[in-house]
Image 1: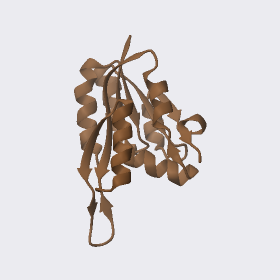
Image 2: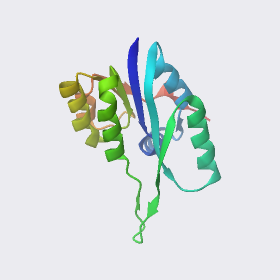
Image 3: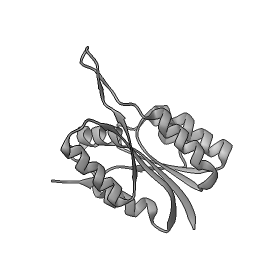
Image 4: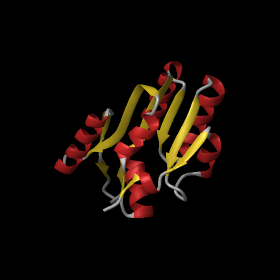
Length: 159
């Protein structure tokens, strides 16, 4: 059976699906697709801790699906900008999981991950799959991965 690690940049997928479609990502449907006929080695959703009840509900849903939820504090800067970046954490987890996985699934459109995907493919011999929103996923990331899966239609929760 194919061994899979699943890493979800929850902030990225939340904002890109909202921007492109005005709705949310369907984590249950994604889980069905990404884990079909596969042994899950690790599944992590990376998010921000804002302390509100809706977010805690969302995190509990992710845990019920099968994800480990990793949280970082949400930082609101005095200039109005905010920060909650998991790029380094996702990269470390991906590299650590590579020795036990045949496939690493990354849910993010962030072009910073193209180097990670290339490293997994070329140096570790691990296949990669990237799920990202069309038009909001970096072309360099799409080109680097073994398989690009557009987030659209059945991967969306329509109201």
